[in-house]
Amino acid sequence: ITKVPRAPEFVEGVINLRGKVIPIIDLRRRFGLSARSHDKHTRIIVIEINNMIVGFVVDSVSEVLRIPSSTVEPPPPVVSGLESEYISGVGKLEDRLLILLDLDRLLSHEEQASLVGA
Image (cartoon, rainbow, N blue to C red; front, top):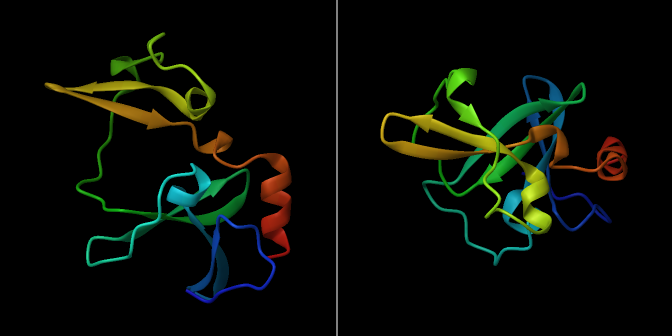
């Protein structure tokens, strides 16, 4: 990851992925969580948000799943506060409940615009 001067605080830097420069966002910083050193479990998840490719640094990835939309329910009322705007629902998979992030809301339009210049 190459650092970018004067980038927003939540931007870890950029990487070259198959010839494309991809901004890398630290999700811990984005959500105001305490910093954690990268280790052998740290991963970068590359996704597309509003026609822009972005990478998110996450603590770990245990598995990649497909969850049928029929098993997804709206977030429960218990989930309140600022963080609830990032949650699109709760997926039920066998005996597990999985919180689903709304990827389109992880970055505001202003933050997305700031990444174009990163």
